[in-house]
Image 1 (spheres, rainbow, N blue to C red):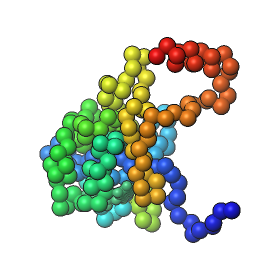
Image 2: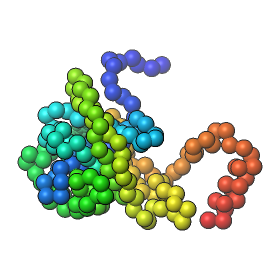
Image 3: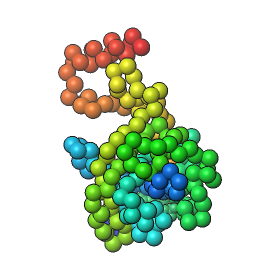
Image 4: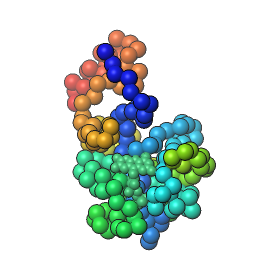
Length: 199
Ligand SMILES: Cc1cc2nc3c(=O)[nH]c(=O)nc-3n(C[C@H](O)[C@H](O)[C@H](O)COP(=O)(O)O)c2cc1C
């Protein structure tokens, strides 16, 4: 039996990312759960931000931001950036985080995050509670310790954090499958087992 309840944003798990904005001198970090991918080629994303957030004004003006993925080591800083406003704190300074210049946008990246995604806003859609900043992903940076010799990313080792209904959960290295494994040919399965055995 399931209990029906009033409609709400109950999808989970969600990312809880640290979005940096502004420039190298004046910057802010806002925690965002309302985010995702909306197109593959070109890669496009969105963040939905309430107009009263300080970051809303900064991103509206600069039309740029960086999505920084959150690890368990960054979880407390991520929570802080989600409950305190940049109006009262320089969050980089207060949290001892390092600003790192991106390749394309002026917004600083958070050096301590293993993945930084530089974004340029292309459109702003207004909704009753949030404004949706639709953006093109213009550059990505992945800590080289998570990139193997073939250029594949090892997200399983990053110890990323997800957000589900008010709580943060670690995404531990416990793979339950991979893209397309439900239709994998027995020959491919055998090859993968052999490769795993070798490691
Ligand atoms: C886990 C988590 C997720 C959040 N997601 C969003 C979001 O998607 N959109 C939003 O407007 N605020 C979100 N918030 C709230 C803002 O991060 C928070 O109000 C922040 O203090 C705003 O900072 P600013 O005023 O410096 O921009 C979230 C907070 C937390 C803790």
